[in-house]
Length: 343
Ligand SMILES: Nc1nc2c(ncn2[C@@H]2O[C@H](COP(=O)(O)OP(=O)(O)OP(=O)(O)O)[C@@H](O)[C@H]2O)c(=O)[nH]1
Ligand SMILES: [Mg+2]
Image 1 (spheres, rainbow, N blue to C red):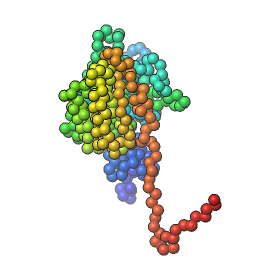
Image 2 (spheres, protein in one colour):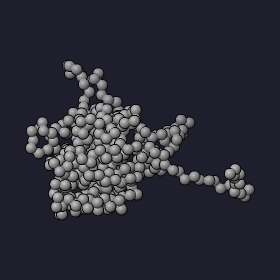
Image 3 (tube, helix red, strand yellow):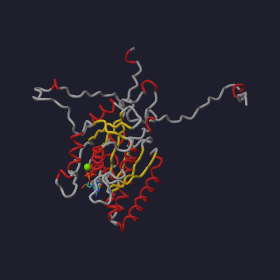
Image 4 (tube, rainbow, N blue to C red):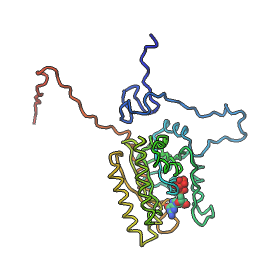
């Protein structure tokens, strides 16, 4: 009877082929995967025809930061690396995203060339306040509003590679990440973490200079990661980047530079000790995305970071499955095979 037919295998992750191969794309047991068993929801872009009266003039596509739904559509349409930027308020997340876009204004960055963006208005707005055209004496960045993460999109082409690959940067207000330290369950709703290829956690270089505040920086990094792990928001195939921001401030205060960098290295060691088993790779970087002095060049350290962000996603690399050799029921079948060697 129709009622007794087996329910179809389904998963709300569009990249997962569990219906065909019965294997979770994230390498999890089907019973523990949070996507398994949920129906795939296909969300259509709104069409002009559904609007009551289209506004007059030429209709150009929007170029604002993407919502979660638009980011999902982009993920389905092309190869993409997702980069989640995590750090407390003022640690430099938005400046880092704007800094990457700004680097491409002068041509290719390392082996990567710019190949387009669907969020150029938001990039431009984020860059404006740190440019001379804003007529500010000091670069200033608007604080990111609380609420769902928004996504900045860049298409890049690596030299020697014919196809473009997108970078999708998830940007969220720092307060929300800080709140998750005391309430890890909040991190379950940070969807950008679940799909991130590179989780990027920021350590504010300016605060690392201060002997009182630097311990808070260490706690912010370790407690935030601990909360994400407890909430099940990380994946074992993810890479982790631990990034010291505002390198110019650290280099400017020469008397404190050495000890500040040493302290950052000790934060990195703590992260490696506690979280090596949770990530496929952990690397550290030192960057100046929006320097306020000449002690570091604009974009210092960011080429290496961009290379790490765009490295081949580990989630797509085949994992070793231990071979299980069935034990034969009959003694004859358990005799070792004799292999003829022709040396
Ligand atoms: N000296 C220096 N200051 C920087 C650098 N990058 C960012 N800043 C400053 O740090 C402040 C905070 O930067 P944001 O990028 O807004 O920080 P955020 O992490 O996005 O902050 P929230 O959106 O509030 O969570 C701004 O005033 C920036 O100008 C840098 O490389 N050097
Ligand atoms: Mg911000």
